Length: 266
Ligand SMILES: [Fe+2]
Image (tube, rainbow, N blue to C red; front, top):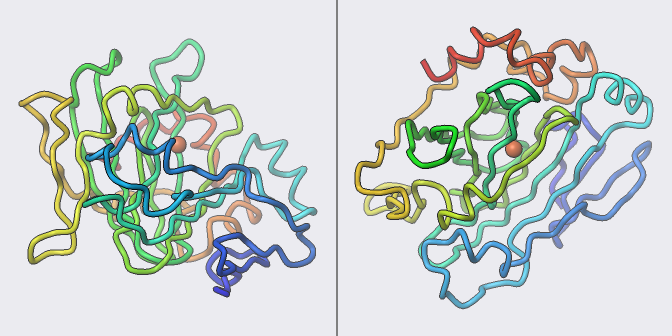
């Protein structure tokens, strides 16, 4: 059992079977989804590998303490957990499927998202393409340890990869109005790069040929540019939202916070 209460700000623990144990006042519940190996195959470097397990990761969506439910509903905010065990899928580290968010109606801007590592080591890979998903403009990698927060700017496709030896548990906040788009990632057999065990370093990036020969290099994105957001302070992102949900206003109104959000990748 891994105690996640300090890092998350919620009365939760991770059990051996990778399910969350919700302690009072939270009611126990089943995962919202369990990602099967067969579902992840289309985004793997080698889709012909023999499944090491049946389930690759799982998650819980729209969690809240009972007394906070109304607060988050009114603020159009959703808090999720994702659990990614330390598996190898062929040469690749275990990862999420990846998706983009649809643009807000009548705009060219999509909902951003904020993540926090509750346990383990995550490598976040984000990439921006043209509106027709034909060409990659930029690809960034951000490594984060327990307690660190990462913001996905608007219009960036994203995955997270468990590059550690321990189970990875993350929390995230996003707008309840967001719409995920999986096809732009799955239609290209994954993101622009695959992350595999490195030669003399923790991991390496292998270009995905589906993105063409002139692929943008992977750049490391500094977390210091996320410090403009009150949600990225020392407190768990759950607690920061309870203290003041306006700390997360950028998730529902990215146009108003366009300048701050643009500094993340500048
Ligand atoms: Fe997302």
